[in-house]
Amino acid sequence: MMLDFGQFYKACNPTKTIDMGNEQDRKYYIDFSKVRGSDTTKELERTITRLSGGEPTCQLFSGHIGCGKSTELFRLKDQLVKKGYHVVYFESSEDLDMADVDISDILLAIARQVSESLQKTDIHLQPKGFKALLKGAAEILQTSIELNGEAGIPGLGTIGVSTENAEVAFSLPGGIGKITAKAKDSPGERSRLRQYLEPRTNNILDVINSELLDPATKFLKEQGKEGLVVIVDNLDRVDNSPKPSGRTQPEYLFVDRGDQLRKLNCHTVYTIPLSLIFSNDFARLTSRFGLKPKILPMVPVQTRSGEDFEAGMSLLRQMVLARAFPDVAPEKRLEFISELFEAPETLDRLCRVSGGHVRNLLGLLYSCLQQEDPPFERNLLEDVIKEYRDDLLAAICDEEWQLLFQALANKAVRGDDDYQILLRSMFLFEYRDRDGRWYWINPPLAESNQFQTWLASPSLSPK
Image (cartoon, rainbow, N blue to C red; front, side):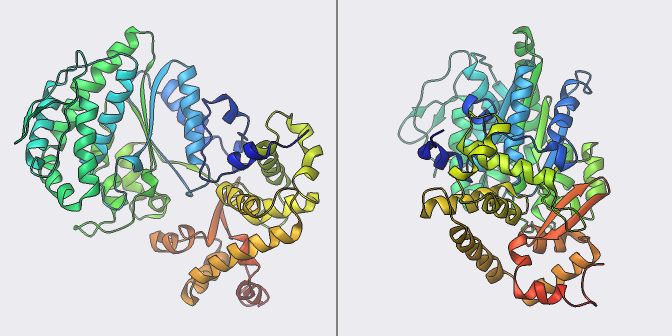
């Protein structure tokens, strides 16, 4: 079989998320649930479809950035759509400045995305309270926001906002989008908008529920739908910066204000930073939402004792080969390794050095593609690995090495500070098996002189 180089190059882009609703993308999907220890996507889906009893649910989803959460959320969306739900999935980073997020920002983003999605299905609402809220926000910012006129959506109504130039009108999603876009780009405008919105957060919740989510759910069920689901992706990327109260942004949003996030009258799924799993507030987080967050672990390439984990390696091989030969049956793809690599050992080297981090694996493969056409020689791959290793070594200091050695010796990460230094920086990877969590160093760092010296010392080596 001939390799379609253009398709392969596009499929290996590490920034590409597999959309399970797309027929071509589905061919690239590999189910890692058996080696990850659990099927978190199935658990999220069952909570909505089987355990909710028709009541709204709110769930949290986390994992390493780049481990495949967005792909699994697209899989969740696809499963729910097939079961009759109207699903609104969106990446919050498109609406929000991840360095500075507040609850009102998230709620407005949800309102915009839901109302826009409903309009596409010809559901048009008349949110009078929302109109008044947006009119007030526009008046607060009218000196620096220019609202271009646009026709109101039939049945939705319009809002008139007086400016020096003209009377302009905007739809609900259009109005929210124009206001929040200006606020996102300007810290000063964002502060002014929040001074107006934050004291009205409960009112925002009320109008979203009473004027948007409740009537939308009613209309959807009249159309034969099971209900409304909102999936808010990329909130795991909010900065860990402190708020004025001294609380980190994730703690403030999901622990201190979590009660408000869970009050929406529809099924919601939020991604959250993995740091919250290591926070002292984890118990409060669970109490706020009533359910423990679902964690998407890494794909293990070795066991706790250091031997190759063949089941994980086999699936990672399939992930690479599926990008090149999506129409070939899995059991036949191994016959085409020579089309991509000079030897099977080169493919194994790629899978092993990725540590089971799927975006890292694709990133290394993409770097090879940027330099040469396949089949790739081992020397090319080693050059790419060396460059990645040098980037990691340039980012780690002596104190962080000692913290890393301590975590490896204890096989545990303790507290949010350790997480921020070791896991968020991808110096350390987390895995799960039947015995629970365990950790190991990012494989390229394991080949460094610093690690090899530590490993050879009887007094410091892992216990």
